[in-house]
Image (cartoon, rainbow, N blue to C red; front, side, top):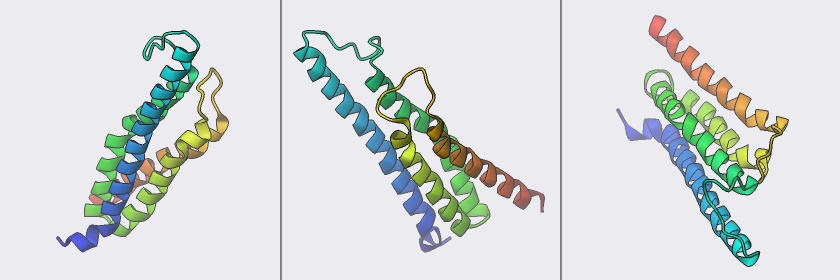
Length: 142
């Protein structure tokens, strides 16, 4: 096993982790901004029970990624190790890019309405996860 054979999947994994930490940073920035806004208005900011739509959106963006992270990274690396590092790189890169678009498609406020444009990221992600599973099954059953 040569590390250069897995250069692509390694870069996809690092990029994906950077997106995740970007989402965590977004939570911190949102929280600080809301704390200042509420304080200025003489109100107390309640991080967990306040139901502020900006905070809910920031949390949902990060938590949605966290929910998908174990399955994506597991399948990415199974694909890279047992099927094709090149396929893993291409489809993993598309997945990471679609995930990075998620906050822009959602918007900065979470409400009762589901933004249909969010399906661009969601369907892309589920499609790639399904592709990896099917590709691995085909390889196993050969």
